View 1 (tube, each protein chain N blue to C red):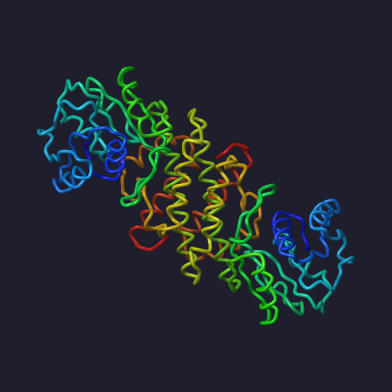
View 2: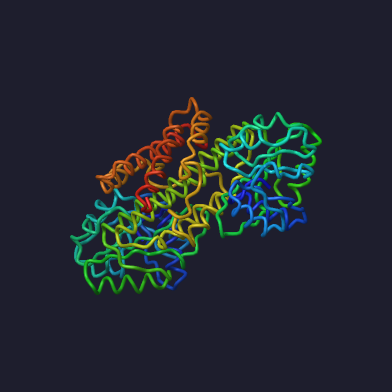
Length: 255
Length: 255
């Protein structure tokens, strides 16, 4: 396991729990390597020269901009498969290796909050069929949702996740801040947050759309923009998102 | 009950289930009045002249722009309380009546999907203390979350709800559309939608923020913007939301 951040931690734990042996944990920062290695009953290394070349899989669970560099420092002609776990990085950055692939878990990981890996979709890609089969077997040992996904599809998945997860969370933060500044608790809006997420489990989001924008309720939208006076960024967000809702309605598609 | 839309339907059912008697259902469209009146065991009327003036409460569960007009057509000097159910309409539009107030359920209602009213926050406002007490008693009979809320606070609640619910749902729709166009199912992203909503039940949204924007991962953001080439509105949304996430981080507050 190369890396010691959230993905390395959660993925490492899931693999170890499924009976895989984590041989080594690599991190440039020796302390980080040691902490995760202890949790995974593995050897900690902080120099790539100490890498055990006999592992079956070399998982680069590191930041996107480090993948090419770390992959370039691994010995060529490894028998194991070199994989990264990134949504937005093409498989091609690994193609100097004999066997390579991608093992992308589509979930938001936070330190200290355990996630049930069994329901996390794992998007797989590989340079050859035997590597794909091997990655698939490893993936199925920890998740019930495993699917092949080329680099363009994976990028679309990552962009979609940024909209549906990261940006959505920011909208929660906007709501929390508005309420706090008006002496109200974010708790008040929690049932609505839950209901909004639950609705799209059963209904396509485009059909679940409600609110002033989809109703074309110009008076309410103007009241809201006026309420946000002096807050240019929030006004801009409100206007752009309202327009987007109305465009999606007109075009009759999902976006 | 004046109105026959989603709020009238769900609120009417909750009140009837709690043992309140719905005397009449008014809608300009006789068919709509009849349908809801039958469900609520009430009399259907489609002319305000037929209004029974003896009701305890007159609930204007109608579109915002109709409230002032319908309220103006009600007899003055009613003994009952005239209330509206709007988030963005000031209590002042009802002040020509002897007793008036606001009964605002903070939830997204869809036809055909029942909602458990017990957990829906009800924001109350009234022109005088006895009316407030009466509305509070009615509210507590159907919900466990009842709180006083002036018109400015209620507007902030409504704006916050638009961000955390309506706009969030649109971001789900954007994600669904991106995935569909790349041959992937929205199902893949559902665990992430659920996890993102569940996270903020326990953690302030600002602390739950993840993704390329909060990490300052410029390379990934550029890849994503390039992926969205030719889609000006999505690019604009992506850029604006990413900037907002970064501003929120810098200012250290929730928005």
